Length: 328
Image 1: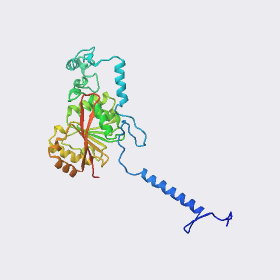
Image 2: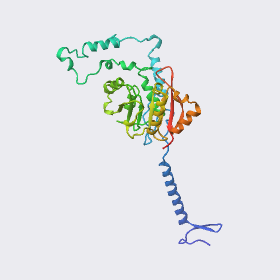
Image 3: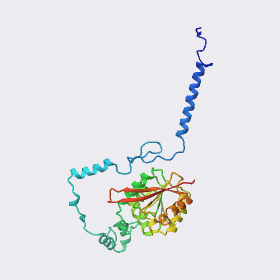
């Protein structure tokens, strides 16, 4: 029998009758449920995305952030420019410029002539409102490290990408010295997002009186504190996305390193934050593998692995050890 136009169409199977209005409502309800399910997935508390292979990172809004390290195309471009310009490394040797004086000779001139103003007599002290030590003006502090000053950029590139850094990240450096590495973090991060604990007074003078002003970074207001014995109380309750120590733990007694790690765990964001230590972790290996793992676990630290960072500036790899906090 044919259905009348006023009667709802029905589908009958195994004794079940489903009218068209019911079918439409069921489909709509399923679509709404799927929408809320997908929304809940998009708002889950998931780990931050890992750095992509090409060096680009995603910001908080999902857009691609600016690249930090050189890409393969960048390296090939440099090689090509050297080739097309007919440059030959073997034919170039280090040479002095048009003012062939050593740093020591330049420093002597600064001391003898009262800086670059050449004031004498009663006016010798009024040529600047904030005198800069001559040792800093000739950049003697750039020679205080085992590797060239330019190595700071290498360290920054590796750590920033390995930790999925963004300008909003909070960073703590243990032993920043004269900011060979720190300058690059300060420039990249938002104001007040870079913190450092450093014990050496001369290094801090170089950082405050020469490096920050010369790089135009005073407005970034980094929190750099003079202190020792791994005392991080001046930094308050801040927890960090990245904590790193570049060739610092090498020069500290093992017991102080472990005290510092215990305190640093509490300063690192659980699961998401990273702690990096360079060169070696003899403070750990001297205990033995199982004992070290057990002790790290008691602190709430997990060893994530060893990294070798290939440098564009030096003919070697730099070794870094990565940890994370596993307890909230």
